[in-house]
Length: 206
Image 1 (cartoon, rainbow, N blue to C red):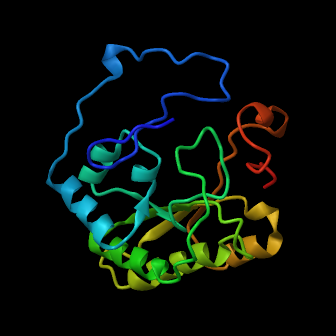
Image 2: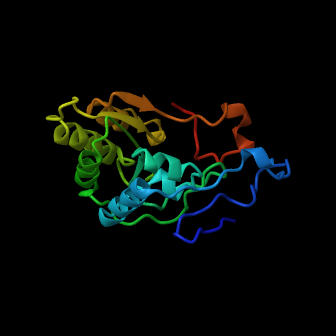
Image 3: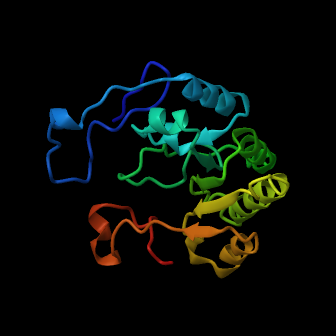
């Protein structure tokens, strides 16, 4: 179960279905007030106007106000509906819309507008696509590199936080061909312990 903040941002889940440990009340010292400054508002307007998705919003990250105020963001490509369901993730599971092939260009333009030195790109799992979304990741990297090639501070470096692409070598090769500066893949736990925290589809096969 999840809650929705007044600005439409999803908040953290109130329960964890696979956990055997009860959720405890957080100590007072860990709490802080959200500060929505002018840069946060600009970032929010930009993301909305470009029809983009960010992990900051979709995953209900509590640091969104601080990061956006510093003009830092992690882009979420491939839509806002994931084909997998992992209890450690806040992103909705559902049937994704058709692939938006113009999204890489818009992400590139937004990186230029934000004048980012470093952009992090992640995305939902797209098991509904024949290539698992490999083209989308690769083209997004290519667009960012191309559109920021003339930056005074050098082209924007790109980090991909990618899904496993079902460990298909051809799909991985497509992504690697775009030459991201960093290729990252989260492994939540070792295979022997994954049944208690992730579905079989959340593999650590890479």
